[in-house]
Amino acid sequence: MRRRKMLRMLGLAPLAGGAVLPGSASAAATSAAAFKGRDYFAELGVRTFINAAGTYTSMTASLMRPETMEAIRYASRKFCMLDELQDRVGERIAAITHAEAAVVTSGAFAALTIGMAGILTGKDPARVRQLPKLEGTGMKSEVICQKGHAIGYNQALTNTGVRIIMVETREELERAIGPNTAALHFLHINADRGRIQHEEWVAVGRKYGIPTTIDIAADVPPVSNLWRFNDMGFDWVAISGGKALRGPQSAGILMGKKNIIEAARLSMPPRGETIARGMKVNKEEILGMWAALEEFVSIDHDKEYQLFQARIDRIKAAAEAVKGVSTQVSHPKLGNCTPTLNITWDAALVRQDGNQLREALRKGDPSIEVMGGKDNLSITAWQLVEGEDRIVARRVREVLEAAAKA
Ligand SMILES: *Cc1c(COP(=O)(O)O)cnc(C)c1O
Image (cartoon, rainbow, N blue to C red; front, side):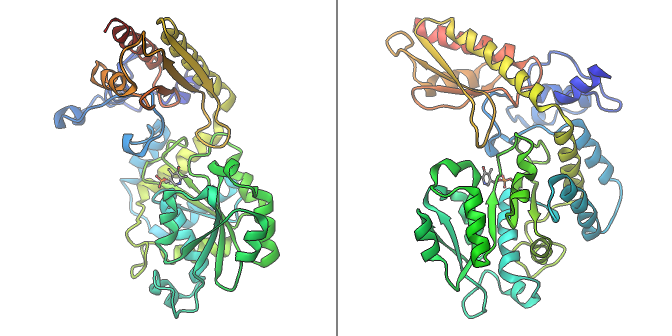
């Protein structure tokens, strides 16, 4: 039982009829071994790698847990009505997250678009069809956010036709609010780059009767962030399903006030003539998202953090063994909350730059992806499969040593 729980935590529990080969070289190799099936990536010539970078979209973000895959396989064998499944799964997700309602979307980005659509249209089907055209429809057209919260993902909001108004101070915020204000949007991961914090943001929304919304896409763990912002009174919350939650990469959750979630769903499939008809989630992703969430809230997050820390300590020690190399470990508090190792070096002693070192790691066997810039390597351990920290530690030391001799 303990072993199973441990394996489950590591995403390594054997699947029905499959066997795990301990110490497999990479995440991809491990899952291929677990399925004992066709090696599709090898057949296609698609490179697989150890992910010591993090939950990056381009790197396919995370590996799904066996429980998620079981739910996906289950769903693939049976028909059901799409809306009925969303209703029932939404109730379960809402209960876990303290929201009035929830719906599985095709990622956090889609959750932002669909959530904003719900605020704009309400439950008026004519308005649903009119998006993203707002002019002359009677719909509001402005979303206010803090300057420090302005990121490319705001495109998800402007896709509904709204424009973003930037403010910095509380005074500016209150001055910017007017008859066209549809919502006040907050980006949790950038909370420290804005002057107005969550509670005040919600309070201003309440004062003027304007919905407040929040993007927490990459911001669990801590697990409590799943309900913290619903409890705080945000009208909706958008989160990625495929990052730390380890659900399908193409899934996410929109959760919040019942009226708005119901309105948002009018823009979602199976309904057509809507801006989100193309943001479809299938029954496999819906069930997989729920299963992933259930697993995520059931695991011991303190233990998991310690596990990630131990892996990082091992890699850190290996890197430091090379003369001229320095390391620092940081603990991000707002998003991507996992021990993060920063490796730097004295360029007179280690004579390769970050790009060259990353290329060496990438070209090695097994291939390893890490992050960083020209002067550093940045490594996380939360997407590693059991045993891979040893491989990363050895390879990091090898490439640094080779660069020291160059
Ligand atoms: C990753 C991310 C998104 C997009 O999430 P998807 O689930 O990939 O659609 C949106 N906002 C922020 C802040 C993110 O980090």
